[in-house]
Image (cartoon, rainbow over all chains, first blue to last red; front, side, top):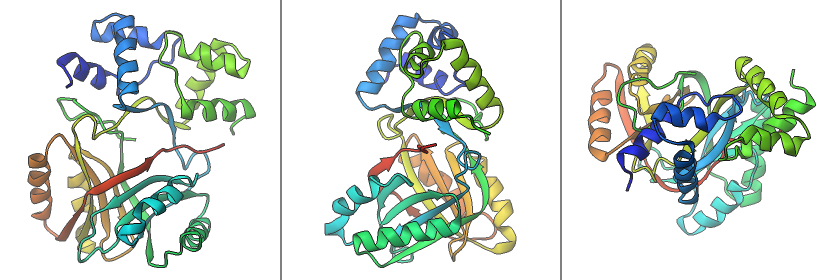
Length: 163
Length: 149
């Protein structure tokens, strides 16, 4: 279970990470705890999977990956894990989930594909289709981005960072 | 333009920022550079919009949050207005207009199911919203936003 200090730390870790020699010391001071305590708790979160990544996320358009597609597939239930394993190994796929299908939305497996162009995205999907033997899929390209923000956990007020 | 040093640095930083007192010194060591060069370069890359965020990325489910992907069918002339109202919810992190009958897709992450139900009800009642479908994940296979530069 998370205690009050955990929530405080998690909220603080979602602020801008200080680009200084001792960033954790600065964050710890903001929270009012020692750097040692902060590092200990962060290592615990990492070990227990509460932190899934420490590091940087790039602006993909800026670094050349301008095209992305939400690609939804119909996967036979018994092949789900096998397909999941194939898809998750692919470097162009950043997100990969099986989802509960609905009558109007029969697709049960969703991936986010990233490439330099839409043509490349389509080609990747075709390759995945032939590698998996799946034939029913749809590609949903974004036509307008309304919001892309980092999730902010345990933050009281409305202050998630718009990017 | 990214220099080859930038690319090496970003490739390393995308996979791991050490949880240690001097994280940038550790990264510098693996690049045969000094700490101050790494910090300066990261400030530059952040200021020039190459880096979205540096820091900790939490696993929403382990923190007890409930997430879902919503596909919405919204009348064309109301999409923009509806999208803007949806944006105001803190738990909405991604919101995109897409080609297809379901033309607005957003993610929603909230601390409990009750808040999710409440928000979806509010959104369903917005003018122009014809249909909302919630597509909760049954299994997460991968979330790893990394680009090899």
